[in-house]
Image (tube, rainbow over all chains, first blue to last red; front, side):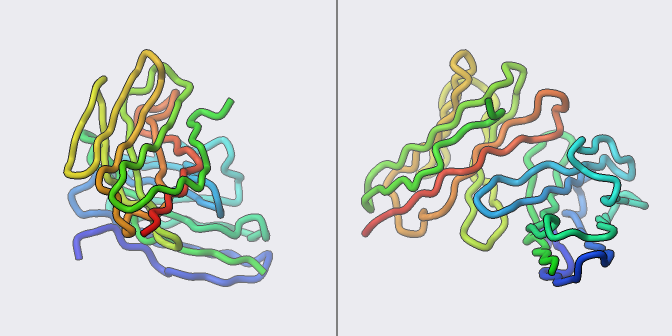
Length: 113
Length: 112
């Protein structure tokens, strides 16, 4: 399978716990993006990487969220001290620099109890 | 004003007819425009992209872009029940050519 993969697909956690998600992009793609999507809304941009460099981060992203892409391949998104409002689908996408069409992974659905 | 606006629907179209989905955007500097299809519980799937004014056709899909009017549309010809989904319009963001801003999506229902 040469598409974007994400792990885990589902995560249920209690409020206050930390969670970490992983994304493996399409292997030739050097850009990797994280989005969050809630019911009835389009995906909301969180952050993106070009190779290992984090080039942009949404102003909406609190300090509890951190993302890494240490070797320019896979990426992790960590949420510390989860809150019920963090419950959402977390989507990862990847692309070339040009063309910049983004391809999405299956997502990780987070439920915070 | 939202950066990317779409009618939430639902838009109901008979099977075999043309479905027309519309989107407006606020930033005149946007250069890249995308249409994604999203089935319930699934992630978005890229179906069309367009960069230049005019029409772009791919099979049963036609994307139309009018930068002067800041308007993007998607036409689906010979609509099939499998086209029933939410269609997301996305535009590259005002401050970053790499960040794309999504609309809230239009729910399309194809009735047999």
